[in-house]
Length: 177
Image (tube, rainbow, N blue to C red; front, side, top):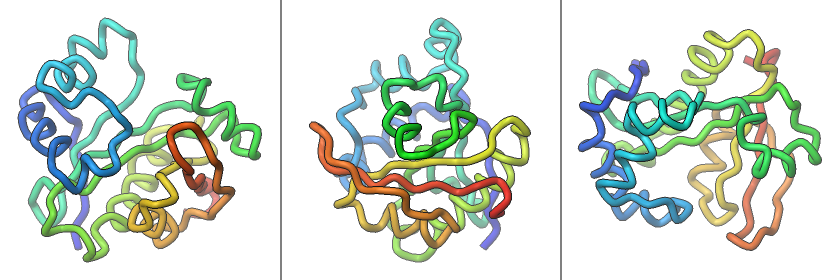
């Protein structure tokens, strides 16, 4: 399986909008506005520049086809979310990642774990020498997501109850890739 990444551009917003509204993705998306205006505002270059957003958005390409989206960001940019992570031992120099395998036909075939592993190696640690860990916290009920993290080499840190539902924190250290 050949996995590569390309930066998300404004030309990809229509595709991303469709992905974010695909039923298998909607089931796990955390209540973000996935209307057209919401996607343009959250993921478009103008909105990100206006906010000074340092989050990097990428399109995952597997064997020549766009199959998913993945992002990384310094956890210090999201202290409201990351404080609980830090309290559980995640480094303040960690990157947070979020991802989705958008194409239903690509799910359940190892694409998610291959995508996550390649992203951590090539982008998170490959482009950011300051990041010591990568962390992700899918919902506990989203077993496919946390199993993909484990197959990608992440270790389970803790399951945490929250107002939004239980989530499962996973981490991988730079030295483990």
